[in-house]
Image 1: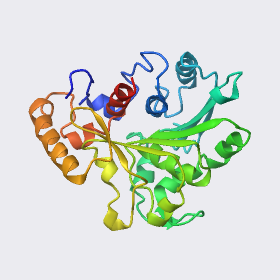
Image 2: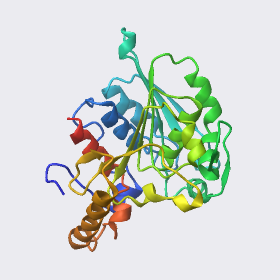
Image 3: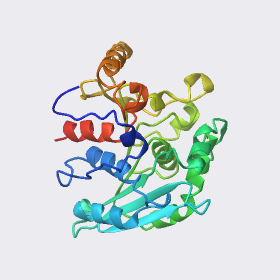
Length: 293
C-alpha cells in the first residue's frame, strides 16, 4: 500500500461503513468524484436501533460542505425500517452554474434481510427503457422511485447520481431513466445486459473498481450481464488509473492478494480475504480523494 493513502482491512469498515467514519475531514472536496465517494458512504448512516436514516447526522455532515437541503426516501418493509434508502441533497447558490443536486443511494446492509433479498434475485427481467436487468436491483429502485422522481422533477441544476454496491446498481438504473449530468459509482456489480447498457449511451459515467473487489465481478458475464463503461481502477498501491489492460489488472490483483495474506488476513478484527476487504466504502473514498487533491 502507498503509505500516503490509508487502507482498511477491518470488518467494521466493510459491514458498518459509518462506524468509524470522519466525513469530509479535509473540508469540501475538490472534485465531483471525491464528493460522490463520500456521499455514497454517508448514505450508510443509520440510526442505532434500526435501518432508518440518521437524518440529523446526515444533514449536519452535508451542511458542512454547503448542502443546506436534503430529502430522504426510504421504503420501510418492517418495524426496523428495512428496504431501499436514498437521499437527494441540494447545494443552493445565487449563481445557477454553482448549484448542484446529488442523489446518493445506500448499498447493502448485511443485517437487513430485504437488502440481501435484493442482491440474490439474479433472474433478469425486461427493463422499460430497453434490455434486461437484475430483478433484485430493479425491485430496490422501485421501492423509492416514485417519490424520488417527483422530487427530481423541479430540479433544474447540475445533477449527479451516486452509490456504492447495491446503491451503485440503483443509481445506474435510475440514470437509464433520467440521464443525470454525471454518474459516479463505487464497487458496482453488473446491473443488466448489453442492451440495457446501451440505454445509458451519452451518460457521463465514472465507474470505480477497487483492485480485488469481488462485487465488481458479479453477476458473471456468462449469466448475460455487462458492465457500463470502462473502469477507473484503484491498484494495490492505491493509485487510480483509467481503463488499464487486463494483464495489468490480473497481475496487480494477484500481487495484492498475496500481500494481503501476509499483512492483514490473520489479524483479529480483519476480513480474511482481500476480495471482500476491497469492497469497503472507505477503501474507495481515500484513493479517490487523493487522486483529486
